[in-house]
Length: 152
Image (cartoon, rainbow, N blue to C red; front, side, top):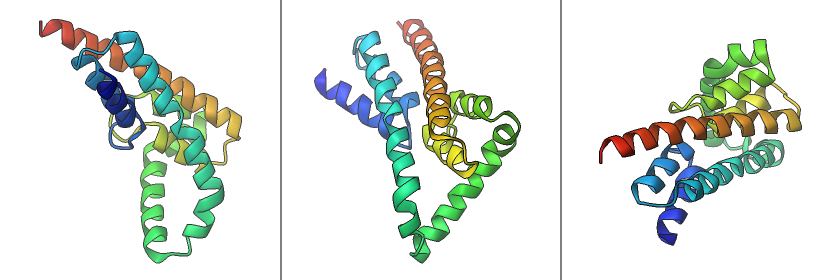
């Protein structure tokens, strides 16, 4: 069970799944619902400060490398296209809704990058991302429990 919790937390930190994969993984491996939710939510929230630090401090130095710069520009364009109109128009609420959507490409990684690109203040961006993650986790938990109990 500890291994399943750890794997769920790692999925929640991963940009390939986030809590959208961590919560279902934990529940389908018979981890307690509350532990699944709390661990996956906390792991997903921890991504924001790490990403913000990376974007604020390390990004400047890494942009000197051609491969990194090319990849960073590609990612930034994808985030601006996905979140741009919402963030420009709605600010805090745009980030919150963008992060809240439980679909691929709209998690805390993209939300952090969008808030960085649109120069949102750190605290405001943190809370928008955190509340968005929470609401996304609630939706994923509800869908997972409905699926899990529907298959038994």
